[in-house]
Image (tube, rainbow, N blue to C red; front, side):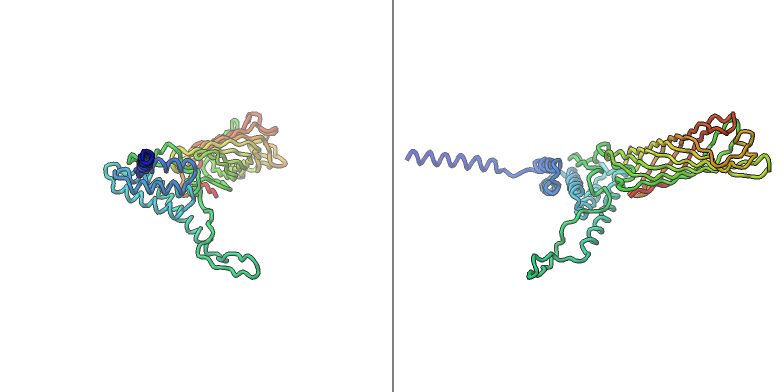
Length: 368
């Protein structure tokens, strides 16, 4: 009898402990679970946990954070349609918060993600509809069975769908995501294969005692982008400049035009200081060719002697630019200053110790 009583008491204790440990999770518990899964890279599990927390959350000001974090998890998991849906729900809920409205720049950033996710969804749909859309038979006697669920595909659109942009989750304080945590690259998307820039502007050329008026100048950069971090991109490639230099031939009094053409190996670094806005620095080394001065009587050579071709000399160029991303692929760039230096080539006038040029340019960049 005593043994039976002890057994009953023991079972009751075990049952009580099990019931105690089986207490349902709270919204905060689900949030912590979601953060753990997110940091481990289990984005589907993180999204599910954030949704469980949202369903249990009783504080209205905290609910938008759950929706944002669900969208973040789906975006990191490359589920374009789901991510776009929850970003829209997040914006809709934040519109109702008049006490602490969403910052305009943050809204613009999220709307950019939504647009890119829509393109990603279209790309997925297009690939899914391509024939054949059936499974592969196991042998000559096995018939192919149609399936309505295509094999999952990896998005091939912009880097917003992948890791590398703002990958932080939103805290449960009803505010915005920390904008200083992780910024996207200055274009809004990390480049993959090609970075090209074409700019034009004016140049002030110094050539010894000669007075050279301000002239138009053009610059082309083509390179390969390397994403060092979410905020820093290095472009390695070639830089080419063209600047006409008009002059009057002293012998014939005819108007002539010389040309300064440079070809440089260039390295450019762009750092995103804010969403869609970046600062860029370029350094290039190469060759400058001074052409169009082969006729005797030009003002650039010793005693006005003509040349047998272009004068080639070493050139170094450094510049600073500001970039603004108008789309994931197109960037507006402003170069407030770029400086080019070349030591004088033998055959130029004695007072020309070097050729220097200061440029101010505007242009466009394209990345893919």
